[in-house]
Length: 264
Ligand code: FPP
Image (cartoon, rainbow, N blue to C red):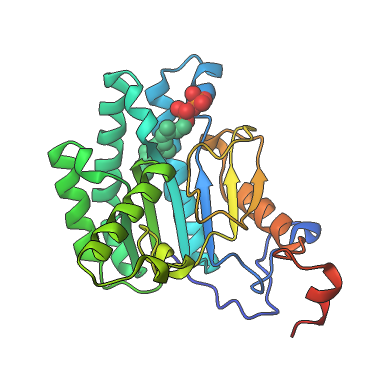
């Protein structure tokens, strides 16, 4: 059971170095994470890549719990890209086993803490048993309201955009919509993330500085944070550092700093 602190706007999360205090004000409404470096973490320890993913699954547990505790309403984790299907089948099978284990072991905590699990991506491509478990978990947690945990599985940002275009084309062919009526709001409502805020912050671990086909539409104005730490070592202190860094930033959304200063 996670204890939820009552973070008021002025509250800070205790036990952090003063310079790195994260306040309850100005937290990301949507945090996206590219969990990278499981393989390198394992290699440095003479372990198999699968051991790296196992340690990575533990970081998933810790970070989901921390985000719920801090009060981040939407967390999206890039767990498996469409490109990842090219990996050795032994590694892919191990990832599905870890995902299944995670879904089974965390269901109770998701229910207790009102976390809704939502998968984004072509999940029908997953093995039947994993797909069923995923859909079952989404159904069971569907009424939970305090946090959304999006797992990107067999996900590709470009495919998501093409899928939205196809959905809109079908709607236009049915004469339910005119092509000229399609605007950014309508387009966004046809993405997997319809009704969710765009990510305010993207964290990528392991020092890599790429977006890797993740949430391409949604990241138009997302702040980027690259952590040098491999995902299995990315735990609450590293998350707090990323959030503290984010809270120091000035987001201008194309306006001048002076214009932003005048906004109430
Ligand atoms: C990237 O590291 C990581 C992945 C492709 C898989 C992420 C999976 C997990 C964190 C564990 C299972 C997931 C859940 C949701 C329980 P990499 O293998 O590309 O690392 P490398 O670049 O160092 O080789």
